[in-house]
Image (cartoon, rainbow, N blue to C red; front, side, top):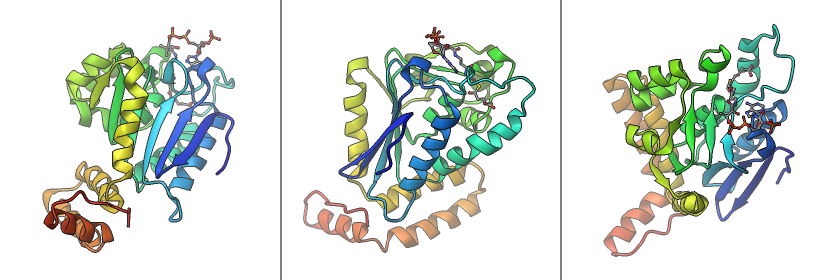
Length: 261
Ligand code: T3D
């Protein structure tokens, strides 16, 4: 298992956990953190990885405050190149993960940090957490996939207001908007998110991975294209040991013991 400076990474009983660990900077995305996040995600995407679900959270009082604005060299640098070189690789790896992802948003999720949080399949937020399209407050446009994901999650009007006003959206409002799956008491966040992620880690991994990819494809496919994608995915899922086990367990009136194969 690789060790990292800016995040904690572990895999226990099929559940991988990545905890951003720069609490004094609200887990802002330094160059090091971005490269370590990419390495961790790449290791999870390897065929020989034991991981069957991923939980992402942040140490301290923030989930992630977006780009590290204190890292220097901000004047006249090519931020477009910075995005394609240092953000898009980890965002793409995250989108392509073959396992389900849960984010436990323990505090602020701002800028690209919000993009990471809402890239998860299931987002759980602590009561005190909030979401912030911080970009406009520093004269930037939303990036890291925000303009793709956010309007699809909350609708154009809400996405537009968040992006143009740059105001905090508290967890309760995010729940009301459908941006998060659940909001729990702060001290119950990690436990709740871990239980949920563990349930996914014990699920039929191939089917779960396909569900995340099918839903992603549904954002751009037409109806016929999506029917075809479902058929392709079902061909694969239908041949897994987990499918045999799931049907057998149903007939035998017992709980299925999925192995992720
Ligand atoms: O090329 C590229 O990188 C382009 C990519 C852009 C992607 C983006 O994500 S752009 C958006 C970047 N993020 C922001 O603009 C958010 C900046 N932070 C804030 O607005 C506020 O910190 C928060 C609203 C998130 C939290 O406010 P508060 O009052 O709870 O905490 P604080 O006191 O501002 O922050 C605590 C510390 O974390 C503080 O350090 P200090 O004073 O104790 O030494 C603060 O400077 C530091 N911090 C917070 N956010 C960042 C940060 N340091 C570096 N980068 C940050 N993003």
